[in-house]
Structures are given as C-alpha cells and as structure tokens.
Image (cartoon, rainbow, N blue to C red; front, top):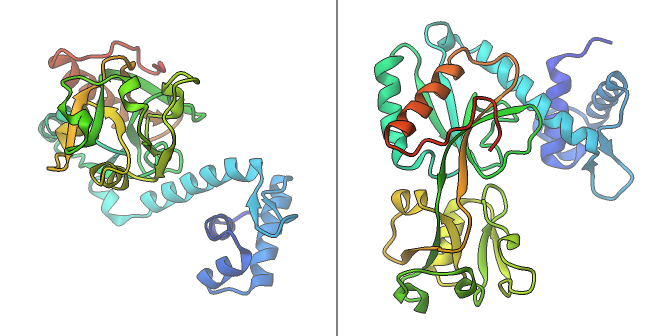
Length: 297
C-alpha cells in the first residue's frame, strides 16, 4: 500500500512515547488502529522497526535509523507547507551551546547585511547534532568529531579547553589547571552534547566519578553548587558568566574542533552562502580552521 505522512507520525509518536498505548492516547486514536499502522509501515520497509519481545518497547537498530529519517522528512514537509516560506525562507542554524562563541554576533550581523532577504534563525537544540539529523535545522554549529552518517562538515576553528570550578573551590586559586588537578573531584558530563568524556584522562588516573546531565544549564548548576568540576572550551566563559563559577586554562588537554555541519543532498539553497560567510568571519579574526568544504576535522 502507499505510505502516507500518518505512518511517519504514528511511528515517531510510538518512538517518543515508548509505548503504543501512550502514543495512541497522544494521537487520539485506538491502540489496535495504531498497531495496524505500524505493521503497515514495517511491511512496506520489509523490516521490524520496534522490538516487542521485551516488557519495554524499544526501537530496533533499523528503527533508530528510520526515526531520524522520518523526523527529517516530516520537518521538510512542515517547512514546505509553511505559508511564511513563500515570501522568505528562513535558514535555521542550530547549536547545542555557545554557538560560534565571540563570532556569533558578527556572523549574524554580516548575514543580515549580505543576505537581507533570507532570515537567519539561531536555534539552541539539545541533542548530539543540534537537530540537524532530524531536520529541525538546515545547518549546525557543532564541537568535536561528527560521526552521524550523511553529514558534511567544514572546520571553522579550534578552541582551547578550560577547567570550570566553583568560585570557592581550592582549584579556583590556581592560575592554570591540569587534568591531574581535576581528577581528584567528580566530573560533570553533558551526555547529550558535551565534548568531554572520561577518555580525556588516562585509564589509571581518571576522576572518581561523574555527574551526568543532559544540557548546559544543568551542567553549569552542578559545578556552581560544587558537586563537580567541568571541562569546556574558551567559548563557554564568553557566553556563560556566573558569580559562582571560575574558568581556568586547562593546559594539558587537546583543543576542540568547531565545525559547521549540514546534511548531504538537497537542502536550503543558502547553506553554501552561510558556510562561506562563517569561514570568512572566523578567518577575518585570525582563527580560521583551514579544512576544505565537506572535510571532517
């Protein structure tokens, strides 16, 4: 049978709710009807998307891949059917934290000067690709290595790492901090979009534990409350000042690449213009990265 948008919406509702029953309630349909819609989609794709063999509904590996594709497809349809896009098609720029640091405002201003007919919308989205893989944005500013399939990147710059501690921590008195200094305390780790993991330390000299959070705000609070210390980049103190936080150079940790990323294939026609302008803005300040367009860092 022909697949329709309702099949995608049904699957995404099930994936988000983690239950056919809860998804049916959200969609205001009967559970048997929603189950039939899911089976129709699986029959069409000739694969199982949902594992029903456990007490808790889980997506299969194929289901996880299809979830991103379905979300991107629905997002593209919503953009195409938005009447506002008939007069001006906004270019959506995603980021998970700190955007492009000190270069963010110059980039936005330069864009408005050069491309006044294309609104540039900056959106913070807390997931690994700032909404790029699910179609919530057209292009994204990301830090670290980008491993999502079907994503092209251009290296813009590399940011030095900083240690982040509470203002009353003994480490705040140090002019510079090392990984060994931080290893005496639990580490706050943003497991959704952070660039730091325990692998930053040698296996035999790792911190005693971690406080896992899911966004920048939770991460900052955990450190300000002196429950943990953190590692970030030089963009963070420029964007997140707080009287209870102190930032110090982290002298023995590698720098973090900052890339502009976009989906391969058809997309917003202004993406190449933003890639070129972002590189121009960063290079004009003497901090350009130098990777070729489409190259991963």
